[in-house]
Amino acid sequence: MQKQAGKLAKIILDSGFVKVVSHIDADGISAGSIAVIALERAGIEHEILFVKQLDNEVLDKLRADKPELCWFTDLGTGMGTHMSGINAVITDHHLPDKNSGKGLWSFHKPNQLNPHDFDMDGDVELSGSGATYLVAREMGKLARDQDTKQGGSQSTKKSGGQDVNIQTPSDNTDLAQLAVVGAVGDLQDRRARALTGMNKEIALEGEKAGVVKALDDIFLFGRETRALYKLLQYASDPELPGLTGDRNASTSFLEGIGLKLSSGEKWKTWVQLSDAERKRLASALVKHVMATTGDKEKAMAIFGEVYVFPKEEEGTELHDAKEFSTMLNSCGRYGKAEIGMRLCMGDRDEALKEAKNMLTGHRQNLVSCLNWIKEEGVVEMKHLRWFHGMDRVQDSVVGTVANMLLGSKEFKDDKCMFGFANDLDTGMVKVSGRANRRLVSKGVDLSVLIGKVAGELGGHGGGHAVAAGGHIPEGKEQEFVKRMDELLGASL
Image (cartoon, rainbow, N blue to C red; front, side, top):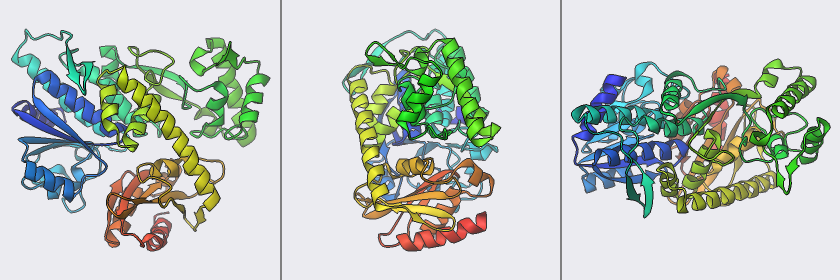
């Protein structure tokens, strides 16, 4: 893998101009940012294009523009057979195009780095940003070897009108921070409650570079910024029976173990607690889950390895990998991926303000979407549940909404959740599916199933075993869920 990363790095460094094309989710924004920073440091002229999906329309435009080199990050593998006429390198982690054979060597050219081609699981062992990082790291090594006198001196350049630090250190290992953000944003830490495989190795490199720190801690989302009662009230991975979804119960629980919920006029957060208070709350949560479920595995799922960034301010969204990635997702989902990239590149002024506004709006929009869906109702089938967001739920957030419904207390965890939304840009219907790890362990692979059913109906799809999506023609939704229900039954 390192040899292949070095090969791609040399191709990139030998280019005078590189067009970066990346996805709009947290992993894609992180990957695109890693690529841009590495190119900046290497002094290579470049542009970046963020896309919701890589399709023939995007590829046709790239062919017409004829950039010297295209660098596809967190996408590209599934379109490998459609890239004739484009000089490209790909750093991706999705499954290869079913028509292109098992490995990268059957593509139009072998200029790709994908964990699946090295017997690694792209769902959990390496993300798109991680694959991009491996190439960026090799770029740093090659540049350093070419000029050993070129150190890692700090410099500042302009990006999007903002000053951003792009020159420390010369080997690019500081970019491991963004690779961790991308991996966590892609939920690659969920299965083991920690990053594993090559993701883990990258996190360790980040620790050596002083930009990442791994902690054994509570695994609930919002350690840095959520009020304690909200930490429990909105807990979904894992769900806290009797507390999740209930503010009063969460508040009473915390008060019952003697914790002060506020300090002055501000709500206390997890990171503001003393070590003794954290231990008290953690112990109480374990006892609560054991008492309500009798399931030790669920009780211990409260804990895991979390990743913080020492150079970011503690108590902010940027200090914690989960919260950082959520902020990037909120930018990408509303067509502002460039703001997320500026954030990744060090802009802590305008980009941070805009990103926080995007995050606030994102959360408000999700609440509105969930309330509307609950009013309209979710359809129950034998092996799945589904809803149609129509024009009320944006196609860019329908997957997030499906995931929230999957983990909500309103539904058991025995079925997959599917959501539809009208994609106004394409005139098609976006479909997103979500499964939990238990269903995947029983044989469900949503990437394969959605790709198969969408293809049968004249659309396309793919992704990961637990989370996948695609597009189908309008009016085919009923056919989709009927066929999907049959295939899920066969898989299970």
